[in-house]
Image: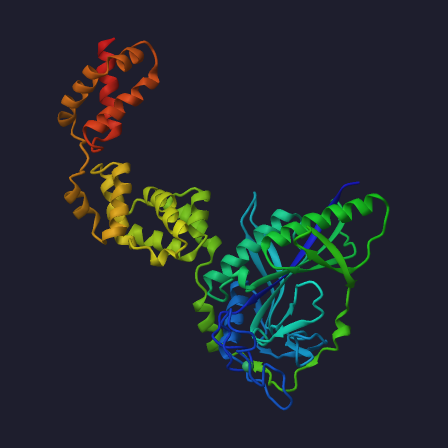
Length: 480
Ligand SMILES: [Zn+2]
C-alpha cells in the first residue's frame, strides 16, 4: 500500500516592534543577557501588562493579508505551564477567541494555484531562553529573559499540505508576505521565524487522518524539510511493518538528522486556559480595520503574476524580481525611466543582484538608483555601447557616482555601430589572420569567433560585436 503525508504548520514570527508586548523594554536582538528586562517581563508579583498597540495592529495586518475573518472583539488567555524561561508560569496567548480565523495563503502553482487554509492567527508573548552550559562536567543552565514578552504572531494552518515541496512553498511564500507587510524581519538566524510541524500518514487517496506527530524545535526552513522527510520515512516504514503509530510530540535533532520522542501529545486542557484577568477585551473599530486593510500592500504572488501579465516576463524572472519587495520596487522604478521590461529585468538579475548579493547589502543601498540604471540600459538598447562596455560603465558608476552618458563620453567607448567605420577594420582582420580565414572557408564555422575577437581588440572593445559578426560573415562568404 502507498501512503501520503498530511502536513500542517505552525509558524511563530516575532513582530517588528521596538518594544515588548506588555512593557516598554526593547526587543533589540543580541544585547547582554537580562539587560532588557523590567518587573513586568520578569513576572514580578503585582505588576500589570499594558498592550503594545503597534504589535496588535501588526498582527491584525498579517491576519488581513492572510484573508482571515477578523474577530471584532477579541481577548487574551493564560496558558499555564512551568518552564524556567517563563517566570510568570503562564504565557499570555489567545485560545478562545483568536484575532483572525478562517483565512488562506495562496502558494505558487506547480500546475494549479493552491490555497493552504489558515485556521487562525493570534498574538502571544515569547518566552526567554535557557542557555545550557556546554563544557564537560557543567551541571547548570543559565536563563536570559531579554526575549521574554517579545510579541509573537502565531499562524496555524489546516492540515492541507501533502508533500515536503508544498510545505516548503508555503513557508517561502508566508515569509515573503510577512516581509512585504513589514510585520516581521523574518531573520531565522535571530530566531524571528520558527516553525512546528504536524504530520500523519494515510493510505494514498483516502480522506482519513492518522495519529498526528508534532515536531518541535524547527528553527529554519531547512530543519522543517529535513524533519518532514525523516518522519515520512519513519512513519511509512512503521506502517508497512504493520505497527500502529501514536499521537506524540517529537523533537528534531538538526545535527543528527533525526527526531526523537519528547512526550505523548499534550491536550489543550493540560494548559488550563482561562481568560487573562489583567487585560480588557479589545474592540476593533471600523476605522482601524479600514486603515489596516488599506495598508496591506500588493502581495508577492499577485505582483509576480502582474509582472508576467503587464510586463511580459517569464514566471521565473517575475519570481526572482518579486522575491524581495525592494527589488520589485526598484524594477518598476526603472521602467518609469526606460520602458523595456525584458532588458531591465536581465540587467537587474544578472548585474545588479550579483553586486548586491556579493556585498550582502539591500538594494536600497546600491549606489546606482533606478533612474540612472535605466539610462545605462537605454544606451545599450539603443546600440550606443555594447554589453561588455556597459558592465564596465556600471562599475564606474558605482565608483564615481557619475551618470552613464557622462562616463561613456569621458571614456570614448561609444560603440561603433556604423558599418562604414568598421569596414577598414574588417579588411585589416581578414588580411592579418589567414589561418582563421582558411579554417572558416574550409567549413569550420566556429573560426568566426577569434576573428570577431580581433575586431573587438582593434576597436578597443567599441565595435558592436553583432554587427562585426554579420559583416565578417558577409565578407568571407563573398570570398568562397
Ligand atoms: Zn520589560
